[in-house]
Image 1 (spheres, rainbow, N blue to C red):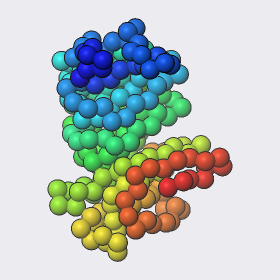
Image 2: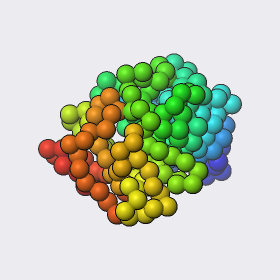
Image 3: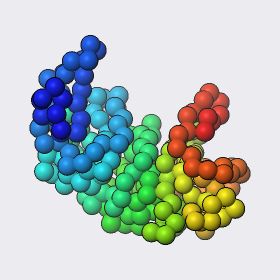
Length: 215
């Protein structure tokens, strides 16, 4: 991709006046497909996720970490990464990375709809969502939004239905019927104390003080 006729592979940094910051360079090639989510870490490194499957010709399946100058941070290696698009991404205070979307595996391991990676790119084995979100080619279910509460609990929203609102998107989270919104415990298990439903797709969740939510 180009910005002002300058090659910049799917990601650029602009100065405050909108001009291209030439100190940030992804190496020209950058990603082979689009970036959908960006998080800038306190140390200046950058989480990216999206539709790409390589970064500067290095395999990075839909999630990667860049150094502050835009180069690939090779200390984060997610292996096979995600098998489908992540739509939401949140970094935990401990530096672990939560991703949610329409994928069913993380680095080849079953992880349907939601996954957590350690800071080195390995899948976090302490995150155990069970069967997670039931995603099939026929129901098209996916998680589209995510928010991390101060308690460590994870609120997810998206396109998944218990059947009452949209039978075409019938889905469950670890076998429990949920409609477009749910909350997980910090280990990925379903929080049964969070009981609500939405009758259409949830695309954005914003966290307010006292862990209140705008959906």
